[in-house]
Structures are given as C-alpha cells and as structure tokens.
Length: 326
Image (cartoon, rainbow, N blue to C red; front, side, top):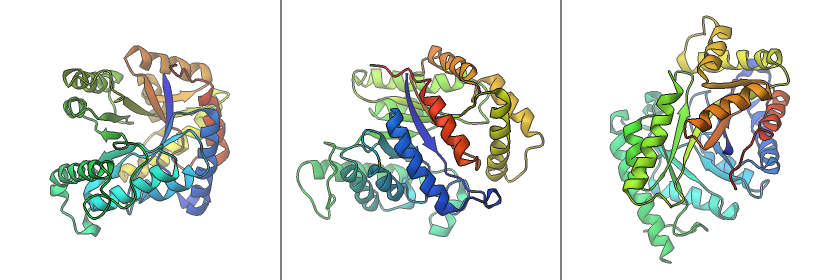
C-alpha cells in the first residue's frame, strides 16, 4: 500500500497559531514528509472559509517544491470553475517546472455556494463550467506538448509529457466509474459522515471497472482514498489531541458545535472511518482498508488546529506504518 498526505490547513485563531505560522509549519512538515518517504502531498483549495487557508494551492506547492525532492505535489482539488483554465494551466505548469516534474493535478467543481458568490459565478453553472474548463486544460497541454507555446497553450510547458496526471475528485461511485472510463485517476474521501467503508470500496471498484473497460488497466491511473488519521503512543494521547481537533473542524464545516465530540470520535473509530489511536490500532484499520481493495491512502494528518508538535509526531508514526508496494 502506498501512503500519501492530504492537508486542509484549516485555521482557528483561538489556538494561538497565526496563519503565517501555519503556512511555515506546513513547509517544514512537507520537508519531513519527503524525508520519511511519503508518496504525495495534497492541499485543499477553499475561498473565504476557515476550513482552508490555501486559496491558491499552486503558490504553497511551489514553495514546497523547493524543500522536497521526491514527494509528488498537487491540489485536492483545483476548483476549475473559479479560474480561467489558462490561469490554471499556467500556475500548475510552474509547479511542475519548479518541482522537476512532480505535479499531480487534482480537479473538481467545488461544493460550497458561498465560495462562488464573491466571484460572481453562478453556483448552478459549476458542473458545466467544470467540464468546459477541464477540456480546455487538456487541449492547452496537448498543444504545449506539440511545442506550440503561446496564447493557445501556455508560455511555460510542464516538464511531464504529454501532460501532468489528472486526478478527479468525487464521492459518487457512478462518477468514479466515468473517471475511470476517461483514463484519469481518482481522489475520494472517507469523510466523517461516511456510513461504511464498503461505500468507499465501491467507488474504488467502479473506478477500476471504468479503467478496465477503457483498456487502461495497465496505465498509471490510480485511486487515492483520503482518510482522517492521528497516531499517538497511547489511546489517551490520541483522544486528547484528535477529539478537540475534530470538534473544531466539524463546528467549522457544519456551523454547529458537536453535541458530544468524544462520542463522535469513538463512532468514527468503530466504523473504521477514523484512523485514530495507537500504532497497533491504526495498522489494523489500514489492513482492513487493504482487504477492501484500497491500495493508496492519503492521511488527513493535520486538521482542526491540532498542535504542531502533535501533528508532526503523528506524521512520523504514520510513516512507520507504510507498506509501500515495490
């Protein structure tokens, strides 16, 4: 199993950590993740919401590229309807250039109306705009790969040819199948609201079915499953960090405080959708995911304003659980 990372970089002033300090910590932890051998690192894009402090992941990813050597880097996801596709192509071609060809381009249409209104873009048009913009991104990269730089392509071509790999985000099994048919990779999340691991496994299987039917089973396309994780030396330590972090995050996401944060944490553990606890506990949960056909996990390892030191120690413990395929 391959292991990667996905960071929200959500911000909570009450913790005493500034946004600048949060970004600096992310740079330091990216360098550590690279040293520890994680496969890739993904950053969420959100606008006007404290659930993420990265409105343009390309900026922070470019900085991370200078501190890492083998870690692949990508947005999860670039919200395509909110930017002109030419700008997306330019920004992420620069990330590919600065990283020496380590860009993974995660794409999506976004799911929060409040992020659309300040841009003057109709939320109802997002899916159509997403399809149009993704088609233009593909076309611009094809043109650049043919050596035609300029207004119809981009002024900086990506290093990876003919284009960086595209990862499409979805929580829907039917959409995952269509992603596979297109020959693209899949990004999907085990969210705190996930009812069962089987529904996540179904997304992965449908994506694989699409790849098979497209004749792309031997291609490089893959499915990455993102899961909340925190590993500590003891269960008590895991609870003391993960429970308040989950409480802050869920309050931010839902607008309402959790009535019982500890019960919420325990229910996520019971269902296997929260990889929380000791090394032994989390290793067993990862084995369960592997049994369901999931072979690439991206740990949501920094969330809810958890202390930098706790997040870093968990990162190192997670690295010891890797079973990276040869």
